[in-house]
Length: 411
Image 1: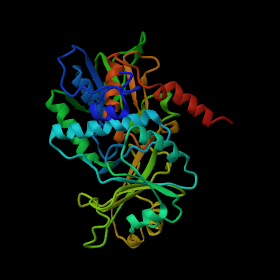
Image 2: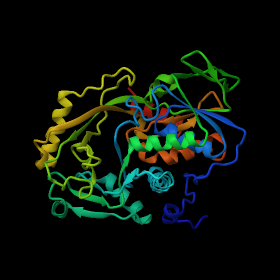
Image 3: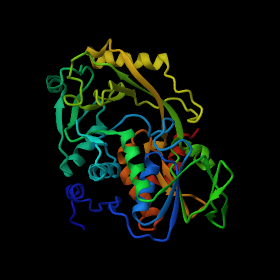
Image 4: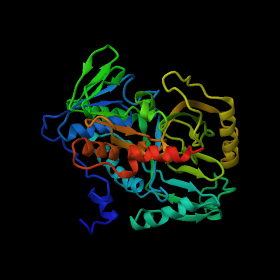
């Protein structure tokens, strides 16, 4: 396997570096059981992949798969290969693209929409410069354009303050709601059990967790436990409180002018502005408006009780940005809005690791606003960790997350 290139990896799914190979078919029962707490996108893929490897899996969630309180709710998520110097996440997203396409074909539903992705850089372009060698090495299709050429290609956009752009024609967006429903349906079809209940970890005795306690008071037991509780992870475990924070994020859908197609996903890419204004968005699609959201981390919230009402200040910021970058939409009506959250982790790294005191329990979280696209591979990493095939990548370890948090908070 030493001669395997990342191009081969993208085409065949061969294991490269820390990324595991896929198990698309349901394996013969291993006689092992697992409970996955949390039916967001990390929990769904973890349950699905454990089931595919032969585990009898029970999935638990208080409100259901991809619900409106979760970080996996809503309509759409960007999927792209530009990841700066982050090799692990770059390799993951290449494999994730393959898996999304493979499974949507298997399930007979459309999840991935390849409308392209346009990345706006700023004068400090070190992140983008670090991405280019990896894109070339993997033979990912991309174009680099200066601001003038970009304005000629996309006259709908004002490139003021943009140094240059990266365009990935094979990137695009995922239907988040559809994805969650499809994975859950496949899991149930293959015999997976679902319990709608609030759950908390049981006691740790002699180095192992002794069960999952439901809101009814009953206890469920399994050979292995996976906690993919998203923004609730910091409430579930005290040792995660400092390093996984639920932050409030507002998302808006603005109406495009009647009859205008230039902002539709047939003619316009998803986009990310990594300059002075940290915004991202999607073209109009699925009868929805033009999506825009601020990627700067918002205030810390309680994901259970937070009112899902937008603020005038955040809306004004979005409108000001819309007027700057997309002048034709300056007076666009607000069609829809939602308040979601990131489960923010230090340096935006995922946390996939064993519980520090329970050898049969695992943590999978820290999506930090970019985890959805990687989630099929997160499921594989969890599967391999639980079954003892391979340890998760070192840069997703709990110890590194704690060290990073402490280094950021030195007084």
